[in-house]
Image (cartoon, rainbow, N blue to C red; front, side, top):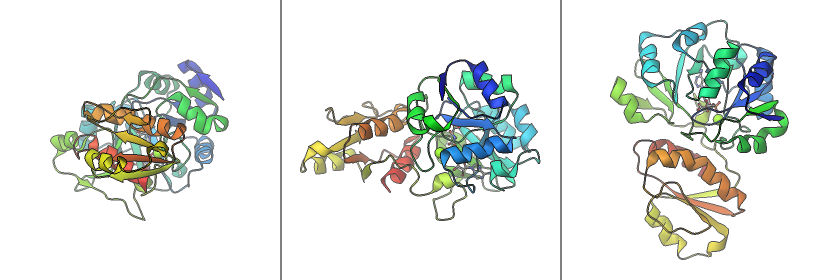
Length: 314
Ligand code: TXA
Ligand code: MG
């Protein structure tokens, strides 16, 4: 495994069928040529990902999206408005996309990521790049190159270091049906989407999910997470227990001690999202036997953060 900063090196590896972890604005993705079945098979293997869980394909423009998917006028408008950015659209796939990439679905997930070096890789390679989050299946997504190396370092060819991810939480996945449906809450807020296309439904998780990112225990941080309704409720409990074994993941005006990671002292949902996975990771690394966290107000990215916390606590 090589840690690289040169996009040309990433292009070379991807074109020869290798795996490169790529930075995006949301989380790091494990990239491979989406149209090369052998490369895609390596992605499933490296992540230990079940073959029924389809991959998101990353492109650099709407024109490139049209090479792999049927892009309706409505989809094109959404891309124009929110991309590059944390929006993934589920669209009818074109035949050129291998069934392995879409796990046999007749649709393909398409996204234009907002990170300059990865856009450069896509443009210079001319490839459509399949990139699931660069973590072993079921674990929390990496938001720095170091997280990727820790989790997958011995299973991939390279990590392209593009710094920490700015959004920090995965893209919002939207399926455009009669009533558009969000399959996964994410880095683009529900409010932004509804401002643009009116009411959308939110698919709740189930045992037979459309997007396995909706599996109820999908963001295992590797340590037990206990979730409270609010910061006040968390602190009330905390004051009556032995504190040394507990790490706190909080947001807002609260105490600051070495076992406490504050996602955003000023209650900013964007800042909180960008620090969520790093916070979980740091508290885990410090060796606490439990992490206590609390729900955030259900607005803006608070919804997606609550979704991830709920799954981490499952
Ligand atoms: O922000 C992101 O979306 C990141 C970065 C790297 O782009 N990627 C990411 O990929 O989160 P992944 O594989 O961890 O999550 C993709 C989700 C999965 O839950 C998968 O089931 C769903 O997208 N998905 C992919 N193709 C689909 C399809 N055709 N229909 C429904 N869901 C699909
Ligand atoms: Mg993932």
